[in-house]
Image (tube, rainbow, N blue to C red; front, side, top):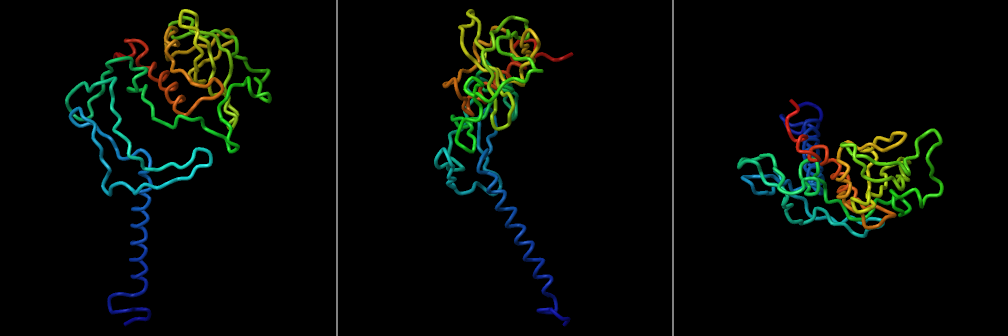
Length: 257
């Protein structure tokens, strides 16, 4: 029997290898469980009904996370199933596409779908809202070489006037423009709504938006506080413009060729 051998068939190196395998398996098991604290259990469609699948090893036990500004958060949470009310399966087989039954740009369907994020604003390390209008930030201004969008007309994909830009909303953590605040035309109710910057093309005399039509600015989801925007409100606003890329006109849902 060689040096370091415990028996004729097992030695120290072999035991260490077995211990490493056990540790590695335990690590994978632990990380798999912890990764299920958000977004699980999975929901899938089966014969027109939404069902849940916790996965091969099940769900982790609830854990309390203490946040700095929003109290205790428990994950995973026992939440009700997401019931889709604005669409129905096109066919009676698993994974069938959903056909909208109402306004798909507002009913959380397809490219207009969104996640139910917390209904409070994202905060900086100091506890201040991250995204705010420039009118309350004295140290922010538009660079001289750039076009100031305030006062410019907004037009939709059909060239119809949707409103006028009233203010700029900036991300004070990332130092970028996130939204433009616009007031819709009198025909559209004279509402103040948000326009995500990534859906806006700033030109010298106007702001062009290709995802929705001029009259559709009237139905952009509203925000409760005109000096801050919550994460859930961001989801809904972004989903509305995203949904317009497919649902703004009937022609957009047809084949390209």
